[in-house]
Image 1 (tube, rainbow, N blue to C red):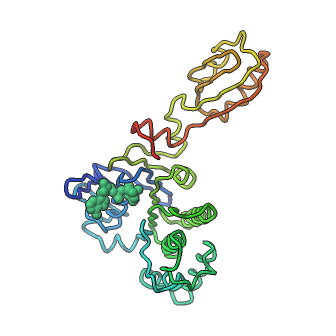
Image 2: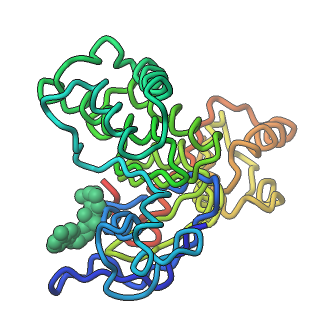
Image 3: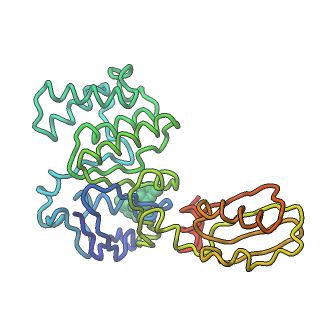
Length: 309
Ligand SMILES: Nc1ncnc2c1ncn2[C@@H]1O[C@H](COP(=O)(O)OP(=O)(O)OP(=O)(O)O)[C@@H](O)[C@H]1O
Ligand SMILES: [Mg+2]
């Protein structure tokens, strides 16, 4: 378990992290979602003993990051935002060297793991290419691969899929999930909503160095009362009154136009068939339905008054 208790970091007079408190459970994928400059990297590097907090405490499995940095370091692997790979070596040697430094595996065990991860990330053909000749996306994958083959107890990925193409993003997400299934606790920093939503068991939204909200993507979205919008086109809305639909507790508001009904609700996907059925039973002819679901973007907007992108 990782506990941030009122953690702070000041760089000169910049408050990069302010009174940040959060508990990260074992074996979960925690997504840290926030815009550029929110403090994500600073949070992770404080936890990883790279930066020293200027206030509060951070403990990793009961170990204090300031008082017991060496013990903490043994538990953590970090895939940095800017790849830190030796340019002269090829990917295979970079990873093999990383495992030599961070694990007690034998040569055979190391080579087996490196091959497995390189193949899974579609980097096997490029295994001997010098990393300085690689594209930005490939280099980023090599950085992620370090932690994926290290399999640390706590794995940190700082924007793991920045610069990656879509197929590569899916491969990396898949490998991160496998690492979690193997028992690691995972923290992923991202400014991409879809990444936070699709990859994380829980999301912590960060803005201006502060924790804004935390929960499963579903929990965060359900805080948006009536945040989803269902538009139902009808041939004629003559005789249609709001109470036909406000009987459902998830419906918060209904707006009736001549040939359109706009419903503000929650759990829209579950309720959609019931609404269609109810309107049909009452004799209204339905043309089309369109559901705009709540996104984490909406959650972010509600809490901060700003857009993420
Ligand atoms: N080494 C440093 N020295 C001075 N200021 C820093 C340093 N690192 C970060 N900062 C400042 O702290 C704040 C938080 O930065 P941080 O890199 O943690 O944000 P981030 O959420 O990781 O952003 P990004 O999405 O751009 O990676 C920013 O205002 C940044 O300018
Ligand atoms: Mg960052």
